Image: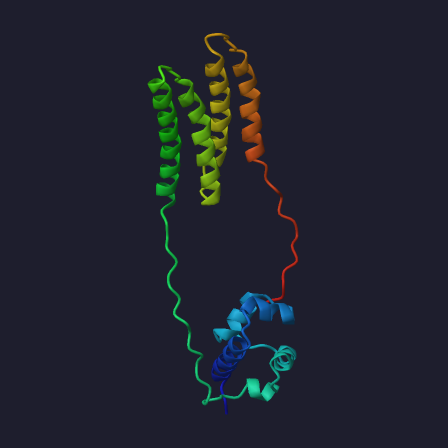
Amino acid sequence: MVQLDELKLITAANLINLRTSAGMTQAELGAKINYSDKAISKWERAEAIPDAYVLKQLGEIFGVTVDNLLTSHDEWKPIPTVEEKPEPVYSARIIIAIAIVGVWTMALTAFVAFWLADLIVPQVFVIALPISVLVYLVLICVFHRRKHLQYVIAFFVFSLFLATYLLSYPRYNPWQLFLLLIPAEILVFLSCNIRVKPGKRRRKKEN
């Protein structure tokens, strides 16, 4: 008599073979029978076995009988897997550093070009400050490094105010701009700390 553990292994092997032969992912199969991919994974790891109703559904999907799902098929061979080339992994820190150095290199290039034309324009470095912070902000979002995101946004806002002030000085002395900086920074920190209360979510059935 087939033991339960052995039956789980047989069903798992059959399910894996049928699903892979049909070119389905665990999520796709789960969607067809209204179960989560975690449940499919448990069945394929032989940690659990589908109930009779689910076995009937699986049989209809793959065009086999329930008995076929519960019977060992020694003639089945595992489907050869195509060896996938590992995707290149790039260092996020190096990419961010290159981007920021690139911004300041362009600023230095512009400064030297003006200097060769007998013009001293230090304002290019003032403009480079908020641009480099913006580049950093965008890249940490791209690489999902958002641990200190609110501080980066706050510094970006500060750099905009500082650049505006320095570009206006000494012709003007708009120190009043920094009075606006205080509520602007408060808004940044408040906005970054908004939390959505978790609501009740419908969970798919798991065996």
